Image (cartoon, rainbow, N blue to C red; front, side):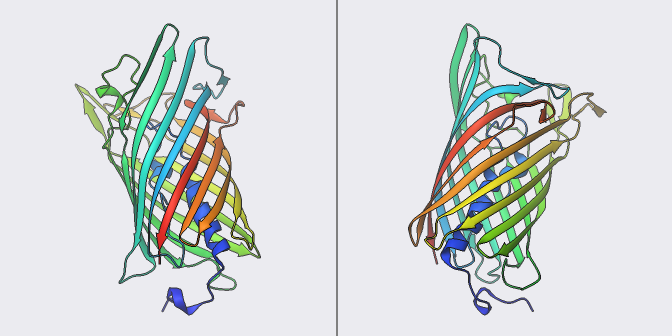
Length: 316
């Protein structure tokens, strides 16, 4: 029978902060452009509980600047003169451990998104409620629980189309588009291993999006794959830092049952994150994430730099 949370030596809170950092970092690598391609990472670990925590609530703020885009051949292009885009997000997140099954936790995120976009002589700002996510995570083995076995967890997520899709946008530059317009489902596996004060992590997910019909056109996005690798270090003072690298890849879209040539997507991201404990029940988590502006680092995706700050309060 798997051990409960109380049957093995718990790591110090600095380690627990690093574990939380890994989960937040995995979320940050999901870019904030919600119109097309954020179901995979956005459905996984939006506010993960550490081993000793029973519940948390948090507020996340994020700003992102687009500095180019990758075309269908993977070439990086800088914006044309007068073309720019910035996006901002504020989100409420929460998580709770299931009392009967203490290795099981449920989390959710509800975002509000604003976009500022300029296209030559036109400039506008719009926004609204984004797509909400709900996640279920089951830790079969905690990191450090067994000497030679890494921590292993299964994750399931649902993306809820509470945002406004591009086809429903009312503004000329579609700045009021805040979501995909489609339900999504995500499944994945997370693996973590402790080596002294270093925590190594890996995460792989697959996401499917429901088809949508607009007028006489029925379209569906391809399956999205997300892979993340991270390395975190925690000090005895409970501060922690981490480096992350991720790949998001999506197959071809379908329109009226036929594949759309050149519609597949992928993008690489790299980031640095940190945790600052303010109190045993309160912590700040920040991250800087960027897409490398080099050929083949993306396809049919924007390149952006994003900065995120999250305040977390916990109960245990």
